[in-house]
Amino acid sequence: MSTRKYASAALASLAVSLIVAAPAFAQMTVALGGRIQVDATEFNDDEANLNSGTEFRRARLFAEGDIADNWSYKAQYDFAGNRTTMKDAYIRYSGFNFGKITIGQFKQEFGLEELTSSKYITFIERTSPTEAFALSRRIGIGLSGDADRWHYAFSAFGQEESDSEGADEGYGFAGRVTWAPQIGDNSFLHFGGAANWQQPTSRDDETWRVRARPEAHQSNVRFVDTGTLTDVDDIVTYGVEGAGVFGPWSIQGEWMGQSVNGDGEEPDLTGYYVYGSWFLTGESRAYKGGKFGRTKATNAWELAVRYSDTDLEDGDVLGGEQKNITLAVNYYVNPYLRFMFNYVAIDADPPAGGGPQDEPGAFIVRAAMDFK
Image (cartoon, rainbow, N blue to C red; front, side):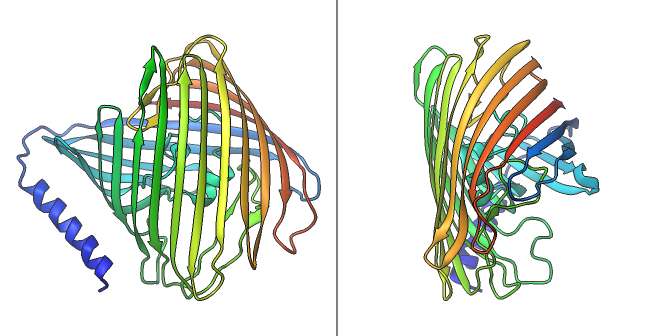
């Protein structure tokens, strides 16, 4: 076992020892919840056929509650796409003043957009840089906490459920720190940074691949795709994030980079996005714990515009570059039901051999509700 694996095992053992030593007397509770997001997408094709259509983007159910004093749990599954997928599945201990410990499958902290739930994001889809570089959910152990306007998170993780079947599992470590100073009534800033190191699974001779959809999920076409990179030793991903909320106005942006290291190609890949939003009816985006939450909006309208750039070309790796502009209109019936309208203008230079420059458009409509 490597030094890093010993360190990860020692961290997990210490956390379990601390938790087991704590008293547990509360009665177990169960609360049910879920979300439904149904989309319709019409593509204005240019070169590639992007396949317009409808889909249940998400159809999730979850159970959460208390197990004992300072102990809680969550188990969430998604049933969209005629398959069942495990999402969050963890137990959590919150008996320490300095933070909480989470064990199981959960989102590893990287990126403001990624960590903001799909129930609360401003646009229908997250950006291509977020899809390309964010860790999303992994099985692991994490420590996170908040102090005044600060938030921190550190974790050790393996792969997502069933992701490394038939191979030695990859693993890694992640960290994120944010600060959100208040600058007035309903006004604050957000600054953050995150980084993670990971080693890929041994399956297929330690390969790595980075790719992303054109911010429209209905199509499986990826205009940016590195293809399979071989002989990869490790991957380092890093990012900075910023946001500001000024009453009904907000801005948000992130820059992300990833260095792939090994005996083969060693590209440095990058991406960024920036956007602004405005509630015509005066509401303000909600925020807590280093991410945005549920906006308390009823019969409310929101306008937003976003620009993103995903560059997967460096040296001999020609994974293409994609630049998108998205216009959005959101109508909130109440905080649990909203209708979303996006138009995505795509400007893509596909990977080498993937065809000429492509400039399609996508009009997307979503009906989204959740309950708890």
